[in-house]
Amino acid sequence: MVTVKAGQKVTNGPAAAALLASGIGSLVLGLMTTGAVVFHGLGGLLNWWNPAGPLTGKTGIAVLAWLVSWKVLSNRYREQDVDLGRILSVTLWLIVVGLLLTFPPVFELFE
Image (cartoon, rainbow, N blue to C red; front, side, top):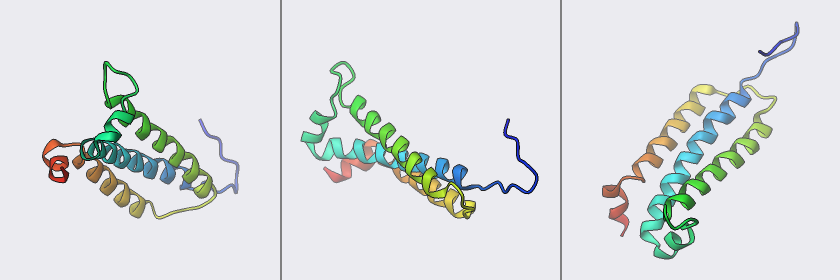
């Protein structure tokens, strides 16, 4: 539980950073999925563990992107109030695009 002292201002920047970072991680997952199909060499590089194939690299890179972007954005927005509506809109678009890029009918268009 967070305790706020009288007169202390609570900012929404850390929450905005978490939201936006989740969208960035989703987009990176979609880009890695499509990239592994389009660029066959990338698929080989993403094969970190043979039984699972390139899925391990795709998700690993996406998780790293999510964590790094969360850290960078939380440092940037730490003491700020940001427009959460705008952040949420951008996040939802990033998630939608990332999700679309994971579907075979979409990424096969780039082959």
